[in-house]
Image 1: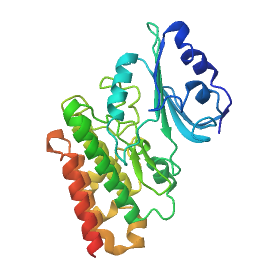
Image 2: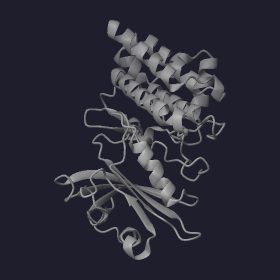
Image 3: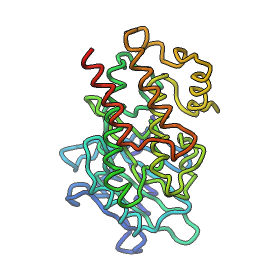
Length: 318
């Protein structure tokens, strides 16, 4: 893992607000708790790096007695203005839910003409990493009950956000995928990066599991439903969506059409408890509804959450 002692370029760009007025920032509810200078001078471990976004794990000594946070650094070519970004972030942070990971702080560097915009999003560190990494590693003990519970938590959190900021303000997640689902120390699922994908910004969405019809309004909320459906398929199959040119949703639908449904599921789920197969099929039916090719035919997230809760209730009775 890359080790960084000082984020020199960001320190120069973002900590000159009083001199250049090119940086805008909005920190935590108590701004004295997490200062940008403390953050950028702290040792950081690069978790992932890319052309447009990078992820860092940082221990900030002067924040809550040495709290560990995750910092997402985003570069945008066609960004919102710094003012619009901060306004949007403040709106999103007002919608709080236990299964939604809201930023502890966020910062934005306003670009000169033709320059990229830099954004920093600071989140509470989640001990069990992302759902993507868990599926990729096929961790032992990731049984049916755990997967169903995670699906239910994501559905509940996404339903809340759709009702609070989706239907009222027209803000969808826009990039829902397993790498944006984080798992706490007790395996609670938390949705991150809600509403951060600009409607016209495809540069960060190259690896997402968006539906073939795109994510323009007014179907943006139904695109989230599609993304959730892909996550369900990943949980059921143990495979990752859209990896190596294979579209998971298309593959599953083709197998089901050939009436080979049993071939879809992660073998570990069947071997560990053969009695789960009926509930696996029920959840698969929910997933297939979510990834329907027509956005209008997909259920709402509220309907999806109710269907998943029904499956959980049936399991508890058995």
